[in-house]
Amino acid sequence: DEIEAPALKYLQEKYPSPQKGAYYIQKITDASDTYYRYYKPMYVGKKCLNCHSETMEDDVKAVLAEKYPQDKAGKMKLGDFRAAIRIQIPAAAIN
Image (cartoon, rainbow, N blue to C red; front, side, top):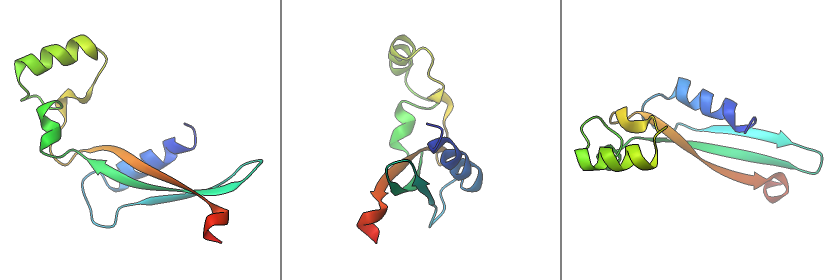
């Protein structure tokens, strides 16, 4: 969403590869509440490469091409930034 996009951009630019202590925090205030979003980056691990690399098996490539024709994750490399895990906490729970 429009709130999450800057967080992902920040993580991808500042932490493009695994680094200890990588995170991002947002304070969000909307019409009804204030809350915090904590993001932790996820990186491509060895097991991810079974389905997300140029070296994946041909049968896996065929299934992915059929089921996910728009997928662009087939050229990932070990340690690439892939996503983020987000936890949302109401400010009232912290105060």
